[in-house]
Image 1: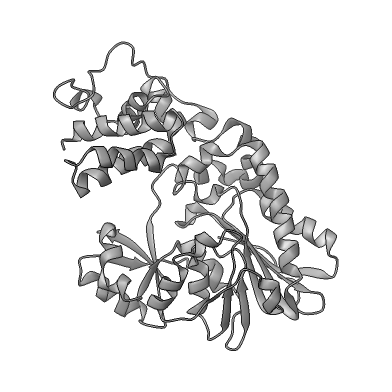
Image 2: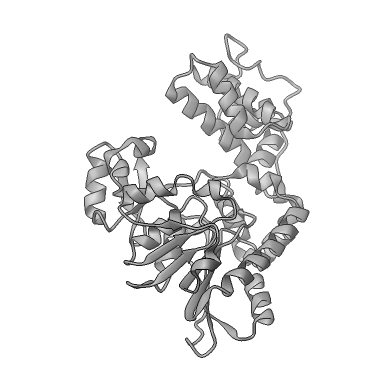
Length: 394
C-alpha cells in the first residue's frame, strides 16, 4: 500500500470509530476486508489511527472537522507536512484538499487533547507540570521490557535481544527496565521473549514493584492482577508464595502460561480471603487510566464524570476489602495508573480517616515526563510498625 492508501484506510477506520464502533473492532474488520494489506501496512494504519486518537481534539481543529478525514488531514498539518502529497484524489488516495478543509489553531485543553470537563481537576492534580504531562501523553508510549532476573542479567537479556536485531537500552526508572529503540515489533516472536528472559512491562510499573518490601518466604496477594504483569515482576524479586486474584477472572487467562514461561509459580484464586492473611497485598485498583492514556487513548475520550465518580467509589471498596486480608505485621500497597489526586492521595487520606489504626509509610508519584506511564503508589501498615516517610515524585 502507498502512504496515500494507508491514509485512506485509516480514515475509514476512524470514521467507523467515530460512528460508535470500538477502535480495535474497526481495525480488525478493516484487516479482514483488506487481505491485500501486508503486516507492514496493517501496522502503519494502526499507528495512524492511534496517533489520531491520542490527539483527537487538536487534529480535528487542524483538519477542520471531527471526521476520519479531518483527523488524518489535521495530523499531517500538525506535523508540518504538506497534505497535498497524500490527499491527491488519485488511485486509492483521499480526495484533494479543498476550501471545505479549513484549519483552526487549537487552544487550551483542545491543544493539549484533554477533555474540557476534566481540565480543572488535571490542573489541580498536576500543578505546574500540567502542560508537560499532557504533552507527553500526546505521543506514542515507549516500548519497555522487564528483564526477568531469575533467568538472565540485564546485559545477557540485552545481548539476546540484539542478536535478533532488537535494540534496547537501560532506563533509569527501574534497574530491570529496558527501552526498545529499534524493531519493537519483533519482541513477541523473539527467543528472548518466548524463553522468558524479558516481559513487556512499562518502566513506571516496574518501579512500583521495585519499591515493594518483598522478601523470601512471604505470602503475597496481587489482588487486582489483571494480566499479571506486576504478579510476575514480584515473583522475580524473591521466593514467595504468590497468589493472584481479579474480579474478572478472564483477565488472568494468560497468566498461567506467562508464569510458566518466566519459570515461576502463581496460584490463581477466586476467593482470596480463604488464603488470608498475607504479608503483603498489592491493590492496583480500577481507575481512570489517565496515566496511561497514550496507550489507551480511546479510554481517555470514553471517560465521563459519572464514570470517574463510580471508579472512586469502587476504589474505596476494594482497598477496604484488601486491608482486611493483611497480616498484623504486613503491608497494604495501593496503586493506580492515574494522574488524579482524587484517585491517589485523596483516596488514601479517605482510607486513613475510615481506618485510624492504619498509617501511610510512603507514597510516590510517577509521571509520563520521566518516560514511563503515570502511576501512584502508597505503602500502608498498621500503626506502630514503621515510621512515616515523605512522598517521592518521579
